[in-house]
Length: 193
Ligand SMILES: Cc1cc2nc3c(=O)[nH]c(=O)nc-3n(C[C@H](O)[C@H](O)[C@H](O)COP(=O)(O)O)c2cc1C
Image (cartoon, rainbow, N blue to C red; front, side, top):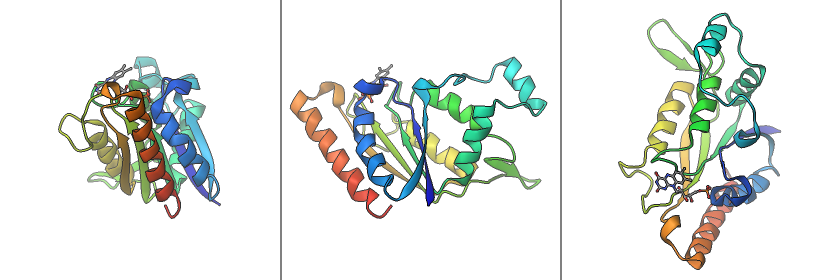
């Protein structure tokens, strides 16, 4: 069975609108993929590299969870990232996760002239909800450009974005309608993704 790595950075967990979209999509994909899930809000060690961690990494001493996650990412056939829109990007926990799992000779290496990605997933799905009316690709939206850049470092393929906007300024019915539309979009994608 092919492997789907899910990276869930929905800090509000059960209250998260982003997770409400992601869960049914993950369930549908679980029929065709082995799902390996990283729920960042429930994990310990999702911290930035501090001097101590940096020095340990230099000695080849990487936290076991980070090495395992990096290997899962490198060997994944598909990657799904669920993260709310925070401070015009995504929660810092997700950046910390990437910082800890972006490992030389695991997710990328070099060829003597530049970095070369070692991942193989040809498709990545990013699910998000945004409080303001900011569509994907707007210059104020800095999550998608970062994910594309990291995908280029790691050799990840096509990025698909499912997003709902203006969530903090919509009526309860409007919010529900947007969530339903995103779930339908995700389930349609999941059929042959
Ligand atoms: C800490 C924090 C920072 C946020 N920053 C932004 C922001 O910069 N721009 C924006 O449009 N919405 C922002 N929002 C609103 C969220 O994007 C919006 O409420 C979203 O639907 C939350 O997703 P969730 O329900 O999955 O947590 C922020 C919310 C929080 C809690």
